[in-house]
Length: 84
Length: 290
Image (cartoon, rainbow over the protein chains, first blue to last red):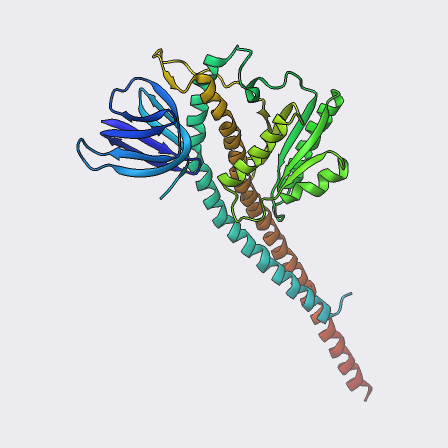
């Protein structure tokens, strides 16, 4: 499983283990699965799609501006605003 | 000697003052809890951002063509002091301590031959700083319009400061804000805001990190955000400090009012008894004269 964290300046929105996350990067969307190589990208306004398990319907989270970082301990998205 | 009626009036007025300070103390205690929770919730973002900054900066460091916000203007002649004060009083010595710290820093810089300007956040710093530096205040930022200043206010402040920096109005910016340690102590602390001090390089995991877009472009976008986060952190600390200091000051005020009421009550009873004794003496003297 991939450890996924979504953080805004105001609070820690999500911290959970999921199957896959699709992030709207500035240079195009990218999906992150477990064991992804270290990677960093800026995020444009759009929605993050969280797949809890393989084949499950994605959950969409609207975010505005920020960064995504993939490291040894999973995916961390630092967003300026999160809707809902 | 005050008359009985005057004493009674004073006791009542001190009592109503005590009610107000007590109410303010309880309000501050409730708000403090909220402010502390907010400060707590903001910590993950700040620490993650600092981590990312550290790993990025260690890659870009040493290059002359780094982002302007990081390498600075190459001079340190003009300094901007961003002073974060509260909007409301009734919080003990908090604001005067912040102002004192700001003035110490300003004097130190002026002694070294630098010029100093101020960017004031919050209402309470305006008057005392204006008294000493009437022409050095570049900007006031009003945070009293919203109930609790949040990230939007922080990014508005950061945008303005960065715009001033890019317009070449100053070379170095310092942030002077209270740091909430305990309810009893909130010390003002000065940190450098711009140019962004190079963070201590975190130990690299050795893995090659891919960047999209390039490191420089990411850093370029990350630096303003880092400044915003610093300001946001200062606003949160200010909120917690204000409530903590207010709670403490109001607790003292309530206790002082209690002491005063006790003293006045004793004085009131003494003079009441004295009046009764005099009356009795008069009656007895009158009866004996018959």
